[in-house]
Image 1: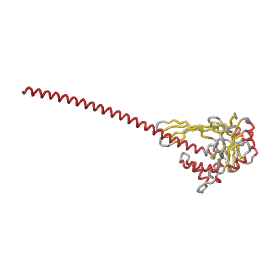
Image 2: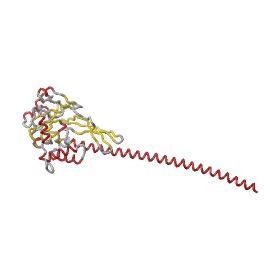
Image 3: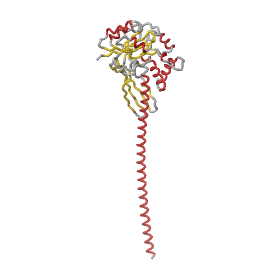
Image 4: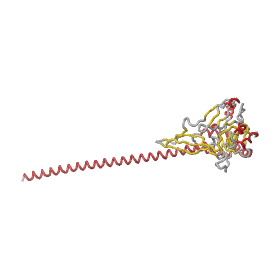
Amino acid sequence: MNHDFSDELGELGKLGESEEKNFHKLLKKTKRKTMLRNVIISVICTVLVMLGLLIANRALLSHSLNTAYNDMYHYKLISDPNVNLGNIQSVDGIWNGTAEFQTYKIIEGIPLPWSEKNIQYNVLNHFSLYNGGYSPLSVTDPKMVEQGMNFARSYNMQNGQRELLFYHPAVHYTKMLKEVSELGQIDPEKRVELAISFDRSYTSEEIRAMLPEGIHARWFWVDTYSADYVKYLGNVPYLPISCSNVFGYSAYADQEDKFENNEEKFIEFIHAGLKLKGNYDFEYHQIFDKLRDGKAEPTKEDVQNIGVVVTGSPESLQALQAKSYVRAAVLGAIVEKY
């Protein structure tokens, strides 16, 4: 009897040990499943977070690039005489990107690649031009030195074309470039760009009417200079104003010359630039304050056109030789007709 009871206890002990082993196996299996599930969830979460960050990075960089493009596009509307903004190529990285803007001129319907401008932008919507970006070549012209013009002439870095120069009507210059006389030396089949500096200000309508046949206005130069700056120009009476320091507006809103721009358009461009609060906010405010001259708002009468960039054939442009309103004339880009 006691023997049977001992056997039963032995059997129960063995059964308990077996159940405990099975429990431990089940526990280990459950732990492995839990660990695997956690690893899978962590991987999925990491992938989703990374995808989210990449999407956010791309979206933020795209927004920053658009902001930079708008800033540069609007500034081009009032600067860089007869220069148009062309294609853009961009490369996005992590948190920042770079973009290259192409610019070009159109001389009598013929496009001429002009310069490249590189900008850097980031996810914080900050952008800026690269340091050491485009700058012209400076070359001493022996003929100019002979005439007492002791400054280096500027040429485009990429194509070797002349950069435009301007002379303010209120400054008494000792010497001025008057290159209309040189047009007869240019191949008649070429097409030429010329910067005309006036003897005084004229309205856009007056300028269009007084230009001889075959000469086309491309860009109007506006007087945006303070009295102090004009005084400074008078202290260096042999030095003209470079094209990087002039402001104005395109003669037409389209390349087909169907829609004429005027003084009111220039004011609209300034207002649009002020709203951007971008990299050129200082310039917009300076121009706006100069135009309004203490008033609440400037009017079209406050926009004084003191020069014009024109294009045409060498023959047609020679008609400017006898025009009294031409105080100075500086050759710019010259292209092949065909």
